Image 1: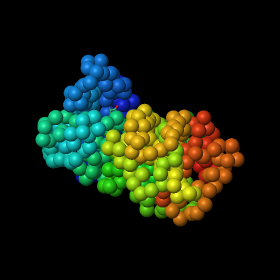
Image 2: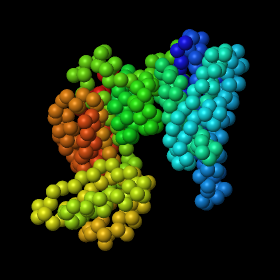
Image 3: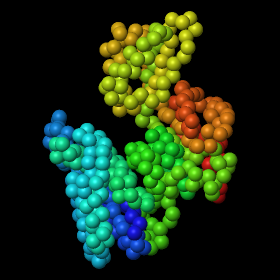
Length: 418
Ligand code: ASP
Ligand code: MG
């Protein structure tokens, strides 16, 4: 019998009425002959409330106790969902991460899933097609026996990892939007829902600012080639719309010739800050003296631009870091100034990163050049550029974010025709 994992996000389980509606989606799949495991988030707002309580309780809290507190939101939803399903006459029970068990690392607050043991849930499938309701966002650190949470949005990752662990045919992620769009429809009303997106493209989109799925969930889906749907829980459970399927590139080429669409989506993020070091020595070891300390401080550096110096003596280095780490990064670099040897440190937080993503870029040239021209025609100055096989990103003044996103969306033929 085929197995399916269904995941419901916070807004889809925001109150008991919505939990009952989510349960109807589960019933539809169960009635259709699937063995179902359901992963739930905390009711929307709950995790924020729990985090606020932790901060109120102690200025410097114990990360293990923080996890004990914030993991509780999912426990409530899982129990309620099991009750709702039982009330519909279906066999169902809740499972907390440690009961499954889902094993995780001990990086409390940002743990990684190490392994999912699906045997207990499979025994329920075999006995009476029991539906397993599993708390998202949490796992068990085996050695210490403590609960570890996976970081904000971590239920997506729980769901895909469980689907892989159970050898499910698919993971359906139900949320408050009806799929993955070519860009954020709030910024570009002409954004279109995509029927299908490849794992690689989705990974770039999630990393570059699309908030639909947690990045790590897409990584796991890609590694396990686990087809994953993003679809709306607000649809009529008897008659749901298709949503967006995240799948292998080959399955997309078949019904959509690659030529028609070079770019699949435009992502943007205002969460980056830019740092420029002026006049650093142009000699071996300088880049390491800048970036090794940042890495050791767990500061994620993204774009890096360095020029070849004219005189062979000095050059400038520009790079971006998450806005939240800007202060830490600049303080750290100022402390290391003697060692690195730069003339000045300049930074800006009012920058935005706009990215265009598409596997079609592999086989087409001049894709990014068209964007540079279109942006210049709108008077938008580009501060930095990076490219990879299936995407390019430009860093611009954040005041131009919307204009830049709309310009590229139109340029690459992504606007829906109405
Ligand atoms: N409840 C957690 C959060 O709000 C995990 C999740 O919903 O995915 O981040
Ligand atoms: Mg989410």
